[in-house]
Image 1 (spheres, one colour):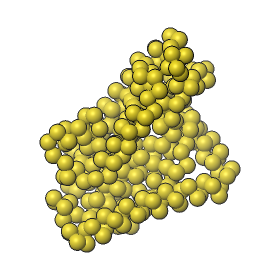
Image 2: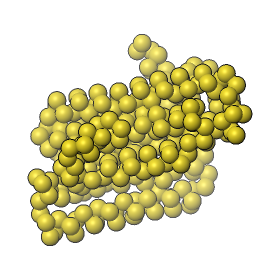
Image 3: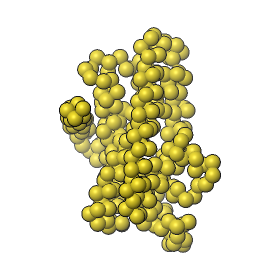
Length: 265
């Protein structure tokens, strides 16, 4: 089991090097996209900073908590799409019949497919997240280590969620519109304090739109150095990934059985 995991980590490292080198061939365009994403995120953090100058506390949350939320969400999202950029392209790959090429590779299909693309703007998200956390929150070594681990958990969540939503095309045909709306809802709820939501909406944030594993558990883990909250965040993210992978491979049977022309129609 250990050696198998190590081999997949080496595979991921090889893909990251290849994809990054491909982007760096057009260095100017790559840097422009990275800087543009950093500035885009900075606008939102500035908005929250101005908000908290008028309202210092929001249902128990301070400006530091919101900055931490944006930092962990941006870093996790950036890490997910830097390494597994094809996760967000899954719908079009399925509908256009482009999985056939990836089926020729050795080992499992899904890792090759996910690792085959790198999103340039996601570097901006990832760099922004670490920068804003280090600059504004100024964590000690323990908080920084926990933050780093939780960003991996959030990245796992985003990858799993993208696989799950993208795999709808196996069953519904071209579901790009539905998939995009579902992902937009996930991103929106992942950048707002969890204390703003109650009742049914709060339940949705741990099920249909699992943003609670970004906006609540990781933040509480960092606020109080709570191992329980950190473990729950990891368990939730891993569950979403496993469900997403299960739905993908279940849907792959439909793809392999010759339903491609029907989906394209």
